[in-house]
Length: 113
Image (cartoon, rainbow, N blue to C red):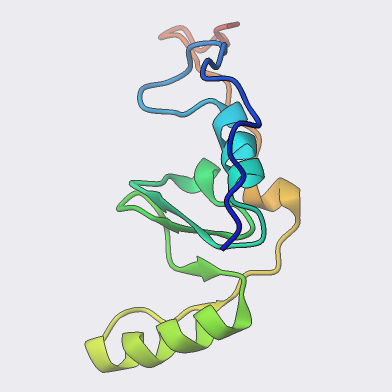
């Protein structure tokens, strides 16, 4: 695989978000460092699912994969191991990255960040 190095700086400046949520800039940096290959996101959440990434995590609902060969290989394995099957995920970028729901206070008002 191609690995580009010395293309970005070592510091990312970003707003603090909810616990353990990575800055979006980190994904772009990784994409530039390792183009045209699958990447792996461990302990992912629904907002982490991205094209060309395999996202694993116990907070994900179902199995959503995009690459045909990966879907086929996963389903063969899932069938043997009694795991849920996967259908190819063909959603839009908006479906892959749903908008964040605003946080609400106890009174039901939205909290602005």
